[in-house]
Length: 267
Length: 271
Image (cartoon, rainbow over the protein chains, first blue to last red):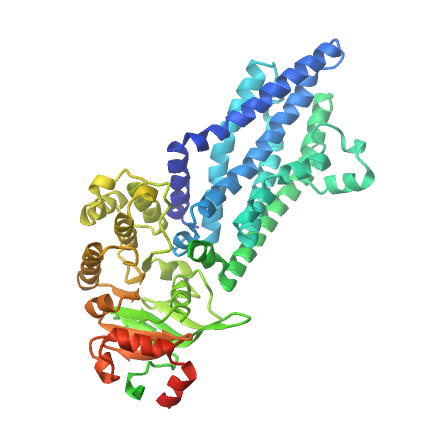
């Protein structure tokens, strides 16, 4: 993999974000609104429970982690969709750019945009609503990494689906995180779910993150084994998504889909 | 009409050894693209040499854009080979594409980037050395100074064509593919573009494959033309001599005659 083509993809995204408030705003505005809304909900719930239970870490912490995951997935797919919206596939893939270099560019873009979102969320949640995430210290890192890896996998999968099914399938990929959320137990233990939903949940890495996080907040030790399994699953999904994207790309080359994305959509 | 056998294109495949000929910047060998319902390109073989402008002509649906898409690596052939400056596109895609570039009327550069941003973005993708200097030089060369910070989406057709051509020569390509580069230009702008492209071939030391429906500009610019119909090359020769050789008054008349004649009839006469 060569650095310059990857830098090209990054530079292009940087130009787009720098030149357009419409692109810059969503990186932090929606997550900030989420934190504010859920922050006040947790305050209200704390008031109602008269101090018997602190909802801030369990609810607001879960919202923060889930938003982080969603932003990563959307960071990858939005960067990809920029090329769909500007009908740029022909120009892009007629260059020496390889598929791994392109995906690497999308992933690094997402790291940048989601990190900005994460910082905004942490600052707001900590300073305004008293979420003490930093007390978890280094334990927070493996949780974020698992979510990060699975977000990347889902973003690559979403991009592959749009490439395969056409630009109109964009609407299909945005709700993917929402589709998964009931199964991973963002706000409740997996045991709350019916058996079949639990089985699906066990196949999804975020389930191990939220389960583990709740355990730590309840005073248990870091569930290293379960988290390692979740991390393994996430890495497996990244590889699977990369493989799927490559297969779809080859299909697009074979059938003319890639060329048609630009050429025939304007003729 | 009669098609002289000696003007027919070579349909036999070229060996990879031949692709090492340093003067040949594009070698297409027995290229074929078959879809479930149709054969879009049917055993096409030809080559483009350094400092040569070759016109790829043919009616709509003849297979020109399909052929160009295969050369650009965005469409894989069913069979056959493509060598760009001696590099096998199927085996070494990135290396081969680094030696080529293109401009096409239907592939506008991202409209949400400025002229300079587009050149820098594609410069990195092509691995252009000394990119800042190269970008400055092209902005100067293609009269884009006043448009440097203008988003490409708001440029006129002529301006967009100039930017597309600047992008197309960013990496000093050995092979330049131009798919109807003057299609949306007024006659004056088209003449300027033609002159510029002609000089790219002679001074830039590259070979150019050019598609156009404007027979006047084909005669003016091209050293040689290939006439494609139903995915096959029917004629090949000097655009200034071909009409007389085939009993037509002009290249346009010859084009219309070939385009309207059923393929079987033409092929029958060539046997």
